[in-house]
Amino acid sequence: MLNFTPAAQGGLPVAGWVLTAMHAFAFGARRCVGRALAVHSDDPDLTLLFARAAVEFNRLQASLASVAAEGKYPDAKAGQTLVIATLRDAFRKRVEGERNHRPASLTVYHLTNSGQGPDISLYELDGRVVRFLARAESARFRNEWNALVAQAWRREKVVEGKGKAKSERFITPAAPDPAVIKNTLYDDLFQLPLQVSRFVKTHFLGRVDEALHKNREDPRTQKRLRALQSTHKWPLVELFLEEIVAMDKARIETLRTVGDRIAARIQRGDRDLLRSLLQASKYAGLRTRLIKSSALEVKAGRQPLLTFDEFIQIFEEAEDVPYRDWSLARDLLCLRVLEGLRDYFAANAEAAAELGAPSDDDSQDAHEAEQGASA
Image 1 (spheres, rainbow, N blue to C red):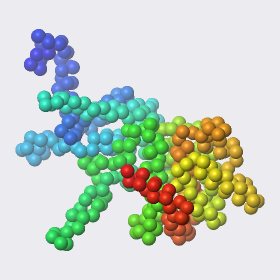
Image 2: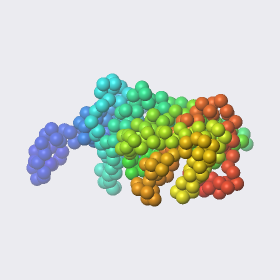
Image 3: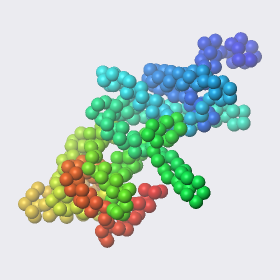
Image 4: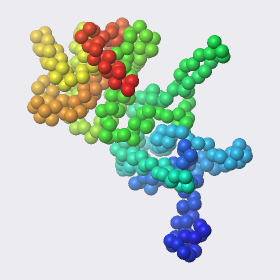
């Protein structure tokens, strides 16, 4: 290849159509932090989808007078967020019958051929995550999925007033631009399935857990606790477990059944039980708390919170051998409990507020959990 021609003189032979594709590559990619952002997939349709979206954007920008005058295209700042937003937009436009496509992974290339330092970064999006995203756009899951995404947009700082009257506050834009504003949930999808426990803790359970650790008189805490009255995440959680975790359906059903029993006990007055489960930092403490509560249920003439077989199925690979991710099972159980308490919280607003007051015994655990969340 000599002087960007396919003449093949003094260099590597390159077919004309290949050279054309090489020159067109930049137009089928987005400019992101001074580099090209391009996407490739096992599914050719998805590769073309991203290339087409980039071409349409670049054509639009090329037609703008401001770009023509400055000779510079807008620079995206949130590459991974932009990729997921583009993928979701494509899935939303598909009809229901087209959603059941085969799993296909994505590879995101963020590269530069700068003479000062050519470089490339690669980001992988697992095929299971792509399938989860496609199914999450269906009518059954769409509302809760959108609500979960809306909570994860990074807030912008707004400065008001001048001089001594100057003040700053952080707001979430009504219509955030995914090319500029980062969405932490979107970015964390690239860490799946390796970081499943962290994802569940941060995005499915995180705000509830944080609320229960905060001062119940804080208005922000009250706002988060009121959200408990409308949470309806379990169908979305089941989809996540099915597609991302590949969890056995029998184990999912056991989590549902036991969670409903725990929710019923909390409604009968054991309001400390949920906080104890959320803040359990050691497996032995969690097991002891569940055994004691089950014993109290039996003493009252009711069935235990969970049987021996149910406990093994949820928390242990074999007897006395807990799952390495036992905390994931704990968080999933808490999510189902919260689902079962929706109507209870709606009818007893003060009950949610009481959950936000740590007892003397677990105040230290709450502090440690709060520190971990901030880290």
